[in-house]
Length: 112
Length: 112
Image 1 (cartoon, rainbow over the protein chains, first blue to last red):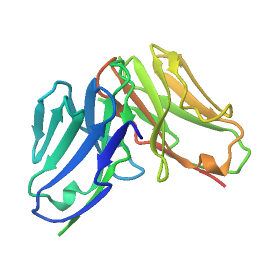
Image 2 (image 1 turned 60 degrees about the horizontal axis):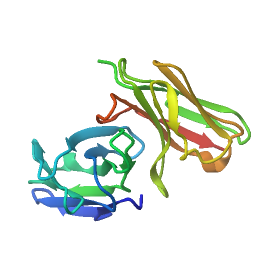
Image 3 (image 1 turned 90 degrees about the horizontal axis):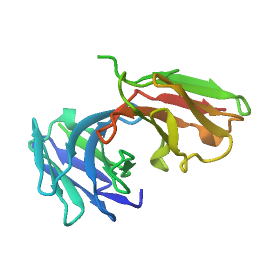
Image 4 (image 1 turned 180 degrees about the vertical axis):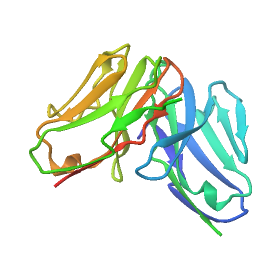
């Protein structure tokens, strides 16, 4: 998606290391969602962020929303092999009507 | 709770045949989305419905694709005639208006 850019496209880290994935929008964000997927399988919802400055955590994954920068970051602390997969950000960028646009995903590999 | 249910999980058919993908959204959800995912193009929104009414079908690639939602608990995506380039994983998702989407496990479609 050109409206949502994720970086990096792929990431290989050693188990135990921290990592950050970014999602930047070219338009105003009305809502930002993070999902995890194994290719060809369904998307697993991680978190939703709606307000500038909002930060949410689930286990070792933390996501933040910088509304001014139209950007969100997903941070994983002390990565584990179970964190491996494709991380996608989705956002309501045209309206807040629930129609989400998705980024192209970041493929994460965690080496044991 | 039952999630979004898609059928079939896998479909292999010959070029030119009609393909029908089915989706049962989560009970009570009023928005339904059809996506297509490929390695080349990522996750693309094809069409979405609010209260059984198609709101935006701008993502439908060609007239060969059609989608219906005859009632709140069922939707179909039809491809007629199918072509090899239609091979992809097709996802259905549902949501309550303006909340995050719940995804089905997808239908892996292969057109020979």
